[in-house]
Structures are given as structure tokens and as C-alpha cells.
Image (cartoon, rainbow, N blue to C red; front, side):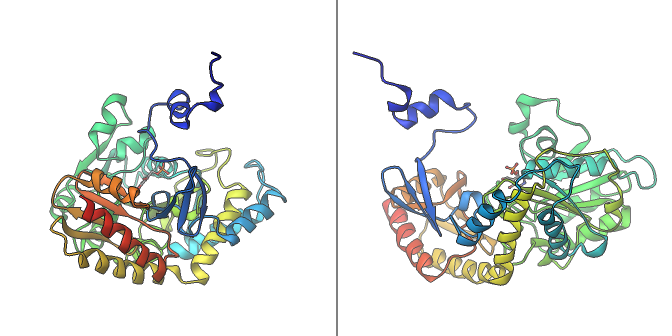
Amino acid sequence: MSTPRASELPWQTRFADSMMRTFSPPLAMLVRGEGCYVWDDTGTKYLDFLAGIAVNSLGHAHPEVVAAVTKQIGTISHVSNYFATPPQIELAERLKRLTGAGDAGRVYFCNSGAEANEAAFKLARLNVKGGHRSRIISLHDSFHGRTMGALALSGKPHMREAFEPVPGGVEHIDSTIKALEATIDNTVAALFLEPVKGEAGVIDLPDGYLKRARELCTEHGVLLVIDEIQTGIARTGAWFAYHHAQILPDAVTIAKGMGGGVPIGALVTFGWASDLFQRGQHGSTFAGNPLVTATANAVLGVIERDNLAANAARRGQQLREIILGFHSTLIEEVRGRGLLLGVGLAEPVALKLAAAALAHGLIVNAANETSIRIAPPLIVGDAELADFQERFGHALASL
Ligand SMILES: Cc1ncc(COP(=O)(O)O)c(C=O)c1O
């Protein structure tokens, strides 16, 4: 009997034999997407209420995104950083406007969320207001990415342990205003915050936290860096979650939903922080190339034109009511804002519930043992919400 060719083996085997063992075995083999739905290789259709973890802002295969990518790749897709391109400048200007950074803002493009935070980490090292400042403050249980600097910033020791030493100087504190007040002084270079801790299970900051953080950072010359990689780009019902608190940071990091599926990230600086980086201090080959910036312009253009921030706020509220409306004893609370919601469970069965949802054709994710994260495309409407209600209801009932 001849040995089967690799391509004749089940995809699960081929995946296990060829991919680095950094991820758990995949849940399905997805081959196609349209709007809020995806299909696997057996033809099964799923309602995608995770959107690639808050990435597919406009769902899958959005015609305007497809048109933008197609047009740009047929025009010019990459140049080096020795040259400018029209979509790159257009996107930088758009981000200055949407973030509120305004005229004094500046944009550094990169390829992922972790890279945006790496850039912000380097920016923090350049904050020497009133002398050298070695301390960088971040929150326990926060997540800022997997590269070494981003790992150092992340408040998840189990992710760091195997890779020590990570870049030094980062201290993690509790997410309380009291801890903030006890820590922020003029020895601190930067404070890194997630407005809603997505990877921790969609955990909100206490009321008034961002406002107090802004006051303390201003008072002590500390760079306030807000990581909006998961919360930004209209997901919480405002362009950026700090807009709800009516504050502006000194720097914001963005990725995920900005490209609608193409890899792009950005660091946007405000005011004095825009003067810190000097020529030659940072860079990346692919970053801000015309292909990804043209795509991001198309994504952001549709979000603005169709006012999807308002849709996220409205649909998020409806989704919250649907979830609480099940009156399930398993559901303790719904956290988060807009279309980034965390369902807090009374028992550690999130993995089981996510698997039951998948079996009923619904993609959601277990952010931890007691939290289900829901982050659908920003385009969801009545039909998708009704479909969610049915599929999630069946999943709950099956436990
Ligand atoms: C808040 C936050 N920061 C940073 C990252 C890292 O982004 P990336 O996976 O694109 O490197 C993530 C990813 O989940 C995130 O949620």
C-alpha cells in the first residue's frame, strides 16, 4: 500500500504536522466568508460573532474593501520607506482627525497590535521630561501583545515566564484609582492602559479611572498611552473608548479593526509626544504600504459614512438585552461596551459553552474559564441579532 500524499491527509493532521505548536488545534477549516457569516470546508455555515477577534469590522468580503484591495494591488502595492504614497498620507491625516490628535498629531504605521505597542514602548523611553525616567506602569491582567516589549507591558506573568528576561522597568498595578494615585509621580515615563481589558475577559475600568489617569499624567509629565487595539475603531460605540471619558491620551495604539482583515497597526501621538521620535529611531519594511493603507482607508470610510459607531452602540445595547433576557442562572452579568461584550458566567464552563455555540453554528470565544467574549462585525443588524438569539439560546440550553 502506498503512503498517502501529504495533501490527501486530513487537514487536522497536516496542520499538526506543519504548523508551529503555538496554537491549540483549530476548531474548523474556514474557507469562505460573506457579511457576518463564514463557511467551513464541509459547507457548514457559522454566524461569526467574534469577527477574527474584533478585526473584521465590516464583516467578510465587504464589496468596498474587496474593490479597494483589488484596485490598489493593481496600481502599486508596496514601496520602501524612501517614498511616500497617497493612501499612506490620507490614512495618517484621517487617523489624526478620528483620534482627536488634530494638527499636532503624528502617525507611525506598523503591521500589528504588538508592534504598535513596541513603538509606544520606545516612545516611553524617550520621555525624559525633567530628567531620566525609568519606570513604566501597566495593569495587572492587561494584554498588550506577544513580542518582548509588549510581553513586558502585559500583566500576565504566565505568558512572560518562559521568555525572561524581558525589557525592564515595567511595573504592574491593580486597576484601581487608589493604586494609580499611589504610583504616578515624576519618576514614571509612561502609563499604559487598556480602556476595557479584552483578553482578560472584557473587564471595564472603574468609573472615573481614565479621567483621573489623565489628570495625574498631566500633572507629573507622564506619557498616557491608551491601547485601543481591541476597543478602537468604533467597536465600543465611539471611535475610541477614551472618547466616552472625554479625555485625550498622549499616544494611542491601534490595529485589529482598522484594516478589516489586512495586517496594519498604528501609533498616533498627541501634542508634545509627537516631537519625541527622531529620524532613524524606528521603522519597518512593510509598515504603512499602499496596499494596507488603501484598505484601511476603505474600511474607515465605510465606518464613517454609515455611522457604524452609532450602530455598535445601539446593537450592543440590544445584544446585552438579548443575553440578559435568557434569564439563565449561568449568566451573572454582561460587561463591556458597544460591540465588545463579555458574558460573565457563574461557573467555569466558558469553553464548553463556546463549543456548544460552535456546534449550533455560532462563533464566540471563551476569553477565560468564566467569560464568553462577543465581538461581532460592526455591521450587524436585526437579522443577525435574531439569529444570534436562536443559536446562543440553543447552546445555553444544551449545557
Ligand atoms: C489590547 C490589545 N493589545 C495588543 C494586542 C496584540 O495585538 P496583535 O495580536 O495584533 O499583535 C491585542 C490582541 O489581542 C490586544 O487585544
